[in-house]
Length: 243
Image (cartoon, rainbow, N blue to C red; front, side, top):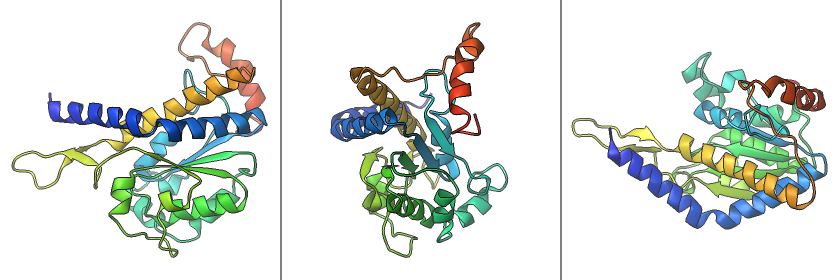
């Protein structure tokens, strides 16, 4: 077992706790306010970041008001290298945001470790134009060391209302092995998933403080799961068609 990877993850979790508490609290307060007003929490990411969009969706212990934006061409299962081409296309992010009902009163989380590609920056800019609150989940360290691929020259952390920093290194992978030229073992998925779940917890706490009990999914793999989730799905399926 590689202890370097585990120790790096522990250090990043500690860093998250010590540096992102205030930012997370502000984001959770905004999310609670928007959800209390009937808004939804949207999540959008490309490549491996699309997994973070699925993490809070239809998940045991997850909020029902989550809408993942999943674009096949920007995922990996129908052409990994193709997804890299698409995520660099100007104006595609704008079209994706405009194709969804996200608007004023909603929050859009944009997940990209590098934050440099055109699609994710376009999506953030367009969402803000529509009055959406935008939250970046990114590595500020990585992003600060690369150039933008967006025509504006901006990176994701420079165009969003709030930034949640996963603290990862340039290139994401963190383990070096003798005889291997490239580092292995990325950290962003683990830390980003942690961030998303902290947002879910914090938002729920703040809703409860307002006297609002938000719908939360039970595990579908318990004896009571289907029964417990039926009414939640019926309530949100009209607004979140992929439920």
